[in-house]
Image (cartoon, rainbow, N blue to C red; front, top):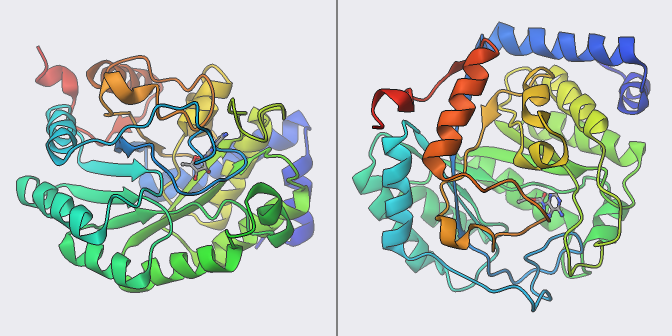
Length: 333
Ligand code: 5AD
């Protein structure tokens, strides 16, 4: 069991031997539980409308410069078909908090995906909703739900969000999701404005308490036209240390090597795998709207889905990992 003092030490250390030792331990723990397998999840960013106004996020409602889009049910299904062709077995439908997607509309979409893809996992990532709404979505066929808690330190949470957004409400959503039966994901950014080692410690302790199935962790990257646009980005080394610590605290957790880390540093995702991560999330969002899902600047997303899945599969095989998706090279001409 890592003490608070030890955690704070590893959060901050830049000592090379220590960090390498930490990454090695995390890698060993991951291999004990998952071997060399790397899990693939196809991401479908289906709406960039958002009623929230988070100070860090490029799709916040006050960003009036952003062109907004929403995919139709048929477009979402088309993304899923593409994902299936590429060998992916989980679809992650992610979006801003878009009130157009009432329970009725969403459940209709979920039922259509469920009917056409009975053997695929459906993950939703669409923010805070009522317990009733979560229950309806679960009943309609959603298996998993991702909701980053963003910060478990109340003061830090309030420094990144407008007053109407509240940490206790967010935590309540996460516990409700778990109770309902979703495989639940939490998470946060590293190096976000006003974050301290103490707030990161609170994040790690909260994760240990919640015991989520998945934890999304990536560096803060400034987004144009947001209150935090001039703040410096998070640090790759810090992100890797936090990933490794999360692996040690939650040995069986699914831990994505995030696009944000890949955007911040070349080979960032590969480094994340070497620090205990075991999930990759290639983007299935249609090319023509991809640039509009601009939660931060310069997001890597230029390849089409087939290309990026192929690239990631090739890359991780070279590194000695085993992709859990079917090899797209086998059935893409
Ligand atoms: N930099 C990095 N990550 C961000 N997110 C939102 N804005 C940014 C940013 N500027 C993350 C949040 C959100 C997830 C979908 O993306 O943690 O939960």
